[in-house]
Amino acid sequence: MVKLGGATFGRREPTVLDIGDVEDIVELQRRGKSLIIVHGGGKLTTEWLNRQGISSQFIKGERVTDGATLDVAVSVLAGLVNKEIVAAINSRGGQAVGISGVDGALIQSEVKDKELGYVGRVMKVNLALLETLLQSGYVPVIAPLGLHSGDKPDQAPQILNINADVVAGEIAAAIDAERLIFLTDVAGICDQQGRLLTQLSTSEAEALMASGVASGGMIPKIKACLRALSTTQTVSIIGGKIPHALLKEIEEGDVGTTIEGG
Image 1 (cartoon, one colour):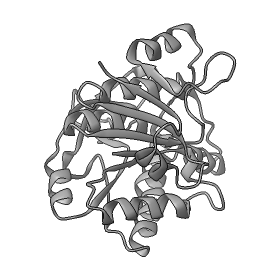
Image 2 (image 1 turned 30 degrees about the vertical axis):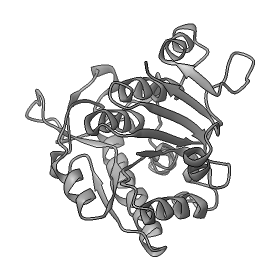
Image 3 (image 1 turned 45 degrees about the horizontal axis):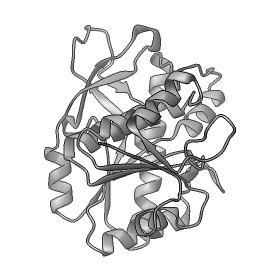
């Protein structure tokens, strides 16, 4: 399972997936690997919010989402970003289908924290649609949105914005993924001196968050890693700026930071 983050967008145009990343995905599918992709798109969402004159605010790496922000996030994530990724994979010989967590009630969620607004906490992952797509030979490409299904006030939106790292961790745990790889715009997790940490235990990862060495957007990534490790043996956070980073991590390892359970 792969989570595509900031490294995959904005190298030439905001929604263009890097050719090397696409080739890796298509090659893995050609080898018979069952892949699930969860993507972000926070940078592009911020860009479109700026165009609308809407400011962005984050709390511990998660976007504060009011009604206007939600409208833009849904349009960018489930529309522009999702379909660009699907088109890039299909145009190079892969088979991908773009969905969001709303489709098939895949991600059932409730409001996580009133301070964050319309940001969801995952309550349940419904695997029926994913299993159907995988059995049919498709790569599901998932936008990080959830169906607002828990304790929903009458006037509240039916869709909630969810951090893509969180979605990836929850789906990986639910489907017992063999491994989860975060392809992002940083080399991995670094220590206080900025040196890359290639191997971490769960306790070491937790200590990095507690000490503040890991902060901002790295917090939801590490939390998602720890969540996935409840059923997944290995999770990795790797830098997507390395050519063919995904294949290199799978075949050779040590591209970024690997966290192992146990």
